[in-house]
Length: 126
Image (cartoon, rainbow, N blue to C red; front, side, top):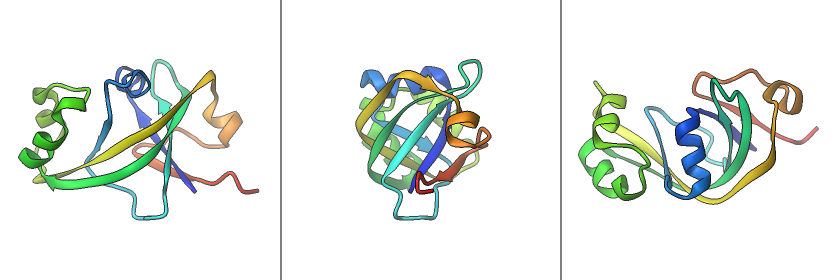
């Protein structure tokens, strides 16, 4: 089973160019068997652009999480704290083994899903 994440295009593309090795989330999926993520680049791209494997999920208070991830966060410290405003803890999904699709896919046609607000589970088993 995989999870589909909606990610702003500027950050989604950084995942595949290697400058962003952590994807930040205010909440995380409960299913611990998730091993990979399908990346849906949100508006204006609105396409699935690739996948990556999960190398672990960090969960710490915000200053600790930033200290551990800032080098490959792909975002500014200001953006980080704005994103996590009013939160005491955050999650960072550690990214490994990225695979960018040569041709972006349609979420509805290829995955039979609507764009998730945060995430959606997906299984390719029929």
